[in-house]
Image 1: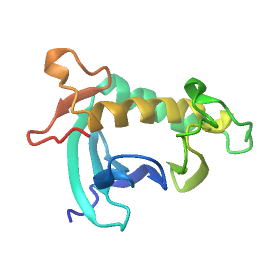
Image 2: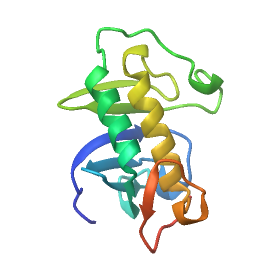
Image 3: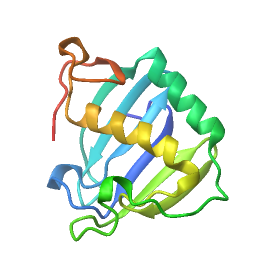
Length: 148
């Protein structure tokens, strides 16, 4: 298993997903990103690597700086909060602090961070190629990317 490249931004546990990636973890080092996939037994499956655009990195940094851990009002993100197939727990790291919530039910105080991470994790997990105009926040995606 490759070592994490930097600080953890996000993870999901106990969610419905492909068997090889029921426990994804997203790491960041500057503009570099690493999405690691683990199975239900916490065995490493694969990783995808890429980088943020300068604009996306700035947007994420601004959202992190503005995060408000006191505002724990639940947000029904894209209408999926409480959906029958929306199970599990998401954990979001903002600097040295973390917050956990039901899948697709982030707290209002960290919503801006969650929105960026949600977009980035989808683009990276689906190997959306920025060169083909398929990504809005990724500048690069490394060869060998495995979509799930």
